Image: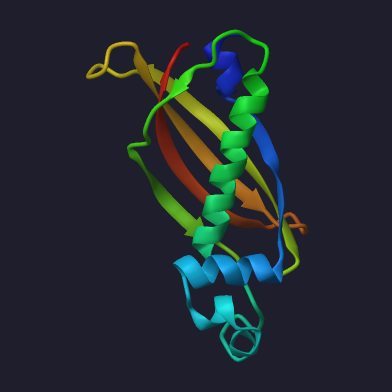
Length: 152
């Protein structure tokens, strides 16, 4: 398997789905985003959202978890895995629609480009466009990111 094929350059890959349960939403929010509409169902009912919804950071963190799990599964049995380094960041992060308690979101990523990194011989930079869709097919999150990759 080539690195380009494994990374899915030009292809959209489904990373998996996640059910945002009320207790998980509240637990995440209590630790990282304790706004009333994320931690208290009554407060959420009286908010602009009308009911309990997940933090946008929660949806972003779930994407990361599923992305890391996919990387390991996809390469298994194909020789030395590529080494993933740090990410130089992301841009254009948009939380397009609330993710309410009980909603399942399916996450994808499209690898857009893989190019050599002049400042780090042997390393390449992978650029991605990532999205998440609720059970109605509506997009709830999207962003662009990059990560350093070194062939194993």
